[in-house]
Length: 112
Length: 236
Image (cartoon, rainbow over all chains, first blue to last red; front, side, top):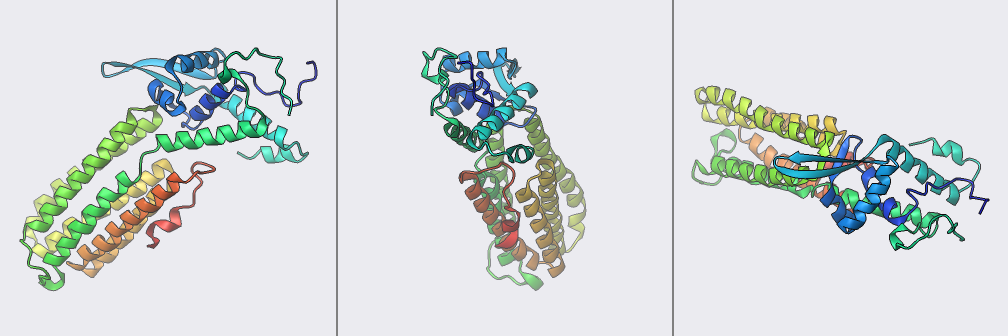
């Protein structure tokens, strides 16, 4: 197990549940956060399961979880950090590179 | 494809990595399409109530207060205005409640943008209404109707273009351009004709735009924000 594949895949993201969480959060605009129940509904995960994965992502400082109030009801908001957005982009680029390890890929990877 | 399974013990299937890179990419694409679909509103709720209000409301105006003072259909004189205002109020209710439902799910800059945009609509119509109601009583009926119609439709066009600028949304901006242009054509054509132009081109344009935009939204999309829908907005 000493020879890892050339582009290292981020183990925090490289798990099915967290990959789906990150992909969903990446569709939000930069400064937006989504409510926990709505995120749960979109991902079709149980609250407990989602919490576990969010904690893991929060520990890696990829997501930010904010507890606030809308009127009187407490709300939990979830969003990507800048580091998280970057990590997700890096992950997607690494996966693409694994699929298409052609030499010209670095220049095509530059484009957004 | 052999995975490096030694890193983490996988007791939870959720914790397992995607089978291979292609699966990972497919999962990302599918999940993002699903999220985008769930987080953007049904655009028919934004376009069709207004399109119908214009088509029916201005249509009745044309039939009752036609060009050169002609009465094409002998409707009660109060009916066109009452219908138009009733349908516009209903449209505001439908669009407003759709926005509120969506606003409760995502917090941040997008939410603020939406709220401020909504306030702009309400307040700008209030100021224009205040000004026009002071003036229009002193005008002949046909010119008064043209003034109300021309200014209100013009403001609608301006707000659509402004919304397009705020969200960099070609559809919204294009619809604003279309409404503005047809409004000019209608005003220049004169009383009676304005109502016909706005009913058919304005109301019909909104119905067509809503249909096209919603159809595109439901299709799986590749890159968000890159759909070339602009040309289709006013064309039919």
